[in-house]
Image 1: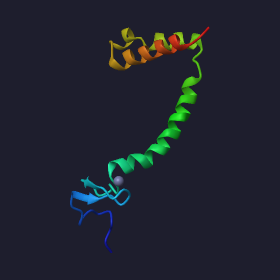
Image 2 (image 1 turned 135 degrees about the vertical axis):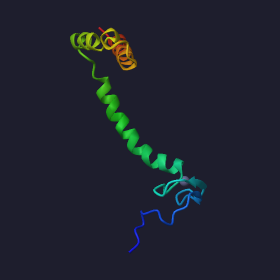
Image 3 (image 1 turned 90 degrees about the horizontal axis):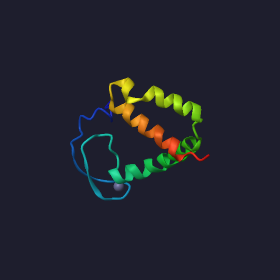
Image 4 (image 1 turned 120 degrees about the horizontal axis):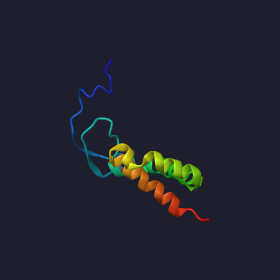
Length: 100
Ligand SMILES: [Zn+2]
C-alpha cells in the first residue's frame, strides 16, 4: 500500500492548476491548486467570517469598560510594549468612533 501523502514520489516544480489550467510552482505536496484558486476558494469563507467580525465590532464598548480597558492596556503598565501600545491605540479609536 502506498500512502498518497507520504510525498515519496513528489518533486517540487511547475504543475498545471486543475482549476484554472494555469501553470504554478508547486513546492509542497498538499498544494493542489495555484495560489489564486486556493485563495478564491478560501475567500468565500473568509468573507463570511469578516461579516461576523464586523457585526461584533459594531457593538460599542461601554464607556466605563472602555476606560477600564485603557487603564489595563496602558503601555506604562507593560514596559511600553508594542502590544499594549497597539491595544491602547485601538481602544482610543473605539472611543473616538462612539457618538453621544
Ligand atoms: Zn488556478
